[in-house]
Every structure is written in structure tokens, then in C-alpha cells.
Image 1 (cartoon, rainbow, N blue to C red):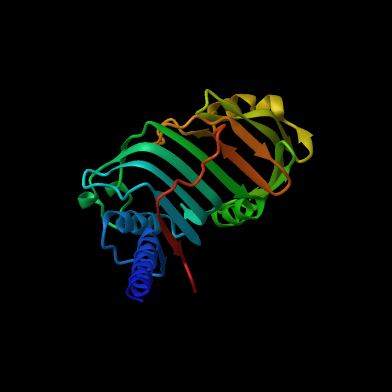
Image 2: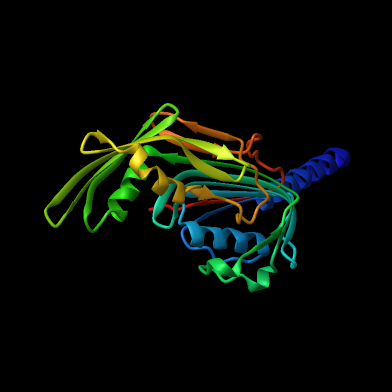
Length: 256
């Protein structure tokens, strides 16, 4: 009987310890975060900077006091970046070196910096509806009714310009291409003004805005390899997609 009782007590202790470890390895947050360690502080920083619908950080261990972590993955959905909603942003890095957490100030973008990373994989997804919503906010002055219509492999855009009695209806059709793994360029672009092809006339002006996106200053060492456009979304990614890192998990949902 004593042996049976001992085994039962030991089994209960093992399950209790296992449950405690599981609880510590996954933490869930909603609303305001009051960080108690460097992992929670990183979560609070990213939430304050992106105002996401949900955010998940997975790490082999929390960042040390120097700001270093060996393996980390971050998955963000419904982030707001500069007033533009991003459906998905994901990144996975190895041997990430940030500045010390003691310098991080929640809500201040410049207080968090990435000094180095051995390897990074990223994926970014933007929806057509969010692009158009952003255009409504950015359009102003003499421009109105600006919209984007995504097609497989290309982008169609149109807008109306009116000023001083001059009225213009502009249409743009373009493809996008990745160059040097860091830049996004317009390709095979055509422009119509009031239904008249003006591509050759404006070609020099188009050259001035190339590349339209340059991630050369992106703090993570990233080489873009995939650019996919369909009727609903635009996807940019590295050849290898980010995958979840095993270890500690911090989950955040915006809630109501």
C-alpha cells in the first residue's frame, strides 16, 4: 500500500511539474501588456508599434540583457503600419542581436533596433481591399476616386485628377519584379490619360521613381525571391518561408 501511495504521489508531482512547465512555455495576453521579463517586453514593443489584430512570438529563450536571442519567429496579422493594414507579416531569424532591452521604450520605434542577424526568412501579404482603403486615406487635394485592381501577375490602377478646369482620367497597368533581392521595380508599365496612351511621354518620369520599394535598409538580412499577385492579394517573401520556432510562445490578441 505504501508503494502504491508513493507511486501515486510521485505521478501527481510529475504531472503538476509538467503542467507548470507547459504553462510557463506559453503565455497569452489581451489588451494592455505589463511586461515582467524581456520576452514580454519585446511583445509589448511590437504590439505598440504595429497595433495588430494578433501577434505571436516564439523563441528558444527570452532575449538576454544584451538583446540577443538565438532563434526567434514572429507572426503578425492585421498590423497597422503607417496607417496601412498588412494582412500578414512573418519573420524568422537566427542569432538575432538587438540593442539592450533596458533601452526599449514601449511606443517609441527608434528605441528598438536590430544590430545583426545570421539569417532571416520573411513573408508579407497585402490584400487588395486594404490597399484601396489606404488609397482612400492618402488621396487628397486634386486627386479622387483612386483605386487598385489586382490581376494575376499585374496591377491595374486608376484615378481622377481635377484642377483649374482641367479634368484627367489616368489609368496605369504594370507588373512588378524583384531585382537584386532587395528592390521592387515596375515592369511593362503602360499609362493612359483620358484613354490616350501616354506611356512614351511619361517614361522618363517613371524612371525617376524606380525602384518603387527598396528594402536595402531593412534591419534584417533578407533576400526577396518570391513576388506573387492574384485577384485578391500581393505576396512578397524569401525563397524559404518563415516557420515557427520551438520553445517559448507569447501570444497576443487585440480583443474588443
